Image (cartoon, rainbow, N blue to C red; front, top):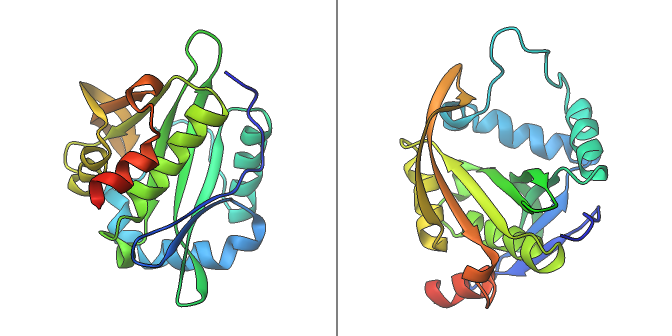
Length: 208
């Protein structure tokens, strides 16, 4: 696996004429990020990571979140992107995608997590963003494996991995602390040799 270089920006034009961007999270994104988070608070709550009782507190401000994620990126442990959408000449924040838990050596893998604004859900933005991130991990960083863990109740995210052809690997009981308790997760994975043509190219071919 190659050294994780950061910052990195990725973008792709969708068939509907919109453009999906993955841009490093920055302090100047605070207003756009805050607006989307506040609008989607109820929509996202059932799927949001929470801290178990007794854990040290997490970032209390957007600036603190940016500092934490940027530090992880500088040390090669994460790729923290915001998802931006350009349509009709305007670009705005519509979600977040992070490749976390990056490990090199004999493992060479990471885990993708994401969320998206309910107002643009169902338009292929998340599958496109995930495919862009996976291709970067496989082609540019020479990673071997990407995982996505999803609560069994999260039908929207299950559709994402189905569209992209991630391989189901089974249930991990009480795997992550989500929405105030330890929750079961289904795990899906993809190895680099399973998508020799690139995941984005395969996704574009399948959706077309």
